[in-house]
Image (cartoon, rainbow, N blue to C red; front, side):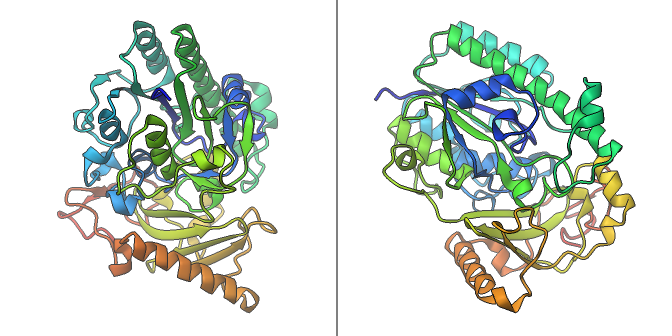
Length: 440
């Protein structure tokens, strides 16, 4: 098979809140992509933090393995930028170009793209026209093109629909109040903009005659920027939209219910490109699942968080039935700086959320408790489940040399962090190596 072009199309903080996942958010271009390709119903990021998630997809490694255990714009880096998928693809003759959001390095030139199309902002209004221009002009094939939209990150638009402001149904873990409904209405406005950007890029790809030999990977970094989602290891935080369309069997409007991780995309891309997957990649190719050669590519998904704005070390294992989360420090309240400021967060904080106890071990029955609200970790009836999953999680951490097993993880010198007991990431930060230790 001729190596396909690869269009990596991605957004910020969208979770699965688009039309193909059953939500009342009109995103017709995204829906068309799902109708024509393959939609993964249970896809998960490696971490519910922006830089770490993207770095894991692009290196095929967990954050504790690739080094991106915090935010790039706050001082974190990949251990080795040569492990970025573009460098592996380059060995197979691929040209790589970048347009818009990337969030894996503050210095774009470190990434190693053959060409970087610099835009003043990474919103759809600037990124989409540049992507259209590049596709119309043409890129030497085969190519890897990353097109990243800032939408649906906070700094949302004002709600564009009075109906949305009045009637939107909030995520089920949030209270149904006017403030939360209007907050969700603003998200919907941003999602509409995202969909328009997707449509413009897809139209340009079609007009350029490159649809048949281009694998489109459309995804986001993690869950919604609402309380209980982004910045947590609940499914609301780690569940992501994932749609692939193109060569290799990613056609026909299929829906895949088996769990997959974004780190599985690296070996999938390598296999499609006819390139040996590097030994450092930790995921599993999706192609056996797509070709019907396997009923699943993994029986568990592992997720993690170490830093976002503040230190909050936790690891999780998710099977079809169970979720086990373990926290690795003694701070037993919500780490509020890791939750984006919003009207919805204000509702939670005013109700005393910041004073609530957070159990250091959590176990959830995802069949009977899909909202992950009833912690069974201390229930003797389920001790055998807790013990088994705890053992599997520790084995995974040992197999992947997770430094958290050796004690608290220090942020790199110069990293900017918030304290765990602050309320907002906008409050004063401290610099590691200058003011305090990272986990104080």
